[in-house]
Image (tube, rainbow, N blue to C red; front, side, top):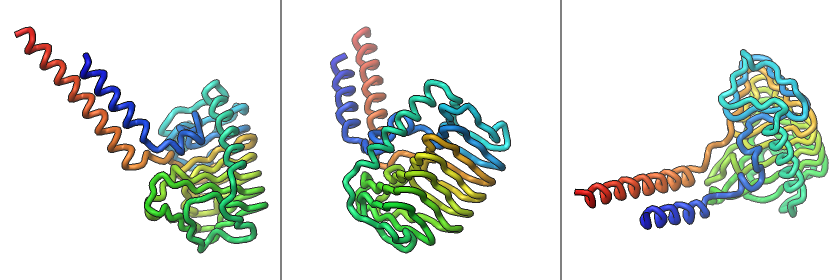
Length: 259
């Protein structure tokens, strides 16, 4: 029994060193790939991996099928309401962070950014490729404060390098976000009003969270909640294996004592 508590203590201690940035920001909204305030609509073969919800609205259309949800759908229930409340908390937290750099008036396309908090007083535009450089730190955060709208041109994309993780990229948008055709996007969009994905637009790893308005999805959109960082996964696997080994050892000792 003593060995069991020692192993549990080790597991808890190691878990304390896991990256907390994503969970600390999103709270219960962390598991949602799509969350709308008024409605969530899909036209065509949308694929969502993660939970889908709406609150306080009640309308979710286009997922019975042709849209596919690899997760749970929450329609104006306590789970969705709590996720919306946590999204609003996260939105306000992101909006209040000290600014690292003011990019007002600049196109995100062609920029290579290190971890930090980036500010746009009004709209933000992505045309081409935005590179986010983690500088060797898989816990590095990239937070974008956008006063009004976020839009991407067709075929725009985000490139993550040197340890940058999609789960640590956040877009706080003052009104609405629209991703253009064939956009490849990373990060969690928290929009005060609405999020729209044009045909073929893909948040390959991220979230579309709209606080008051709609999330509107089109043909062949793919939205996937970011997976844990590789280091976190293997640490959890190690903890699990250690705990399993401890249980097996304790069982062997009990058998030996009875023989």
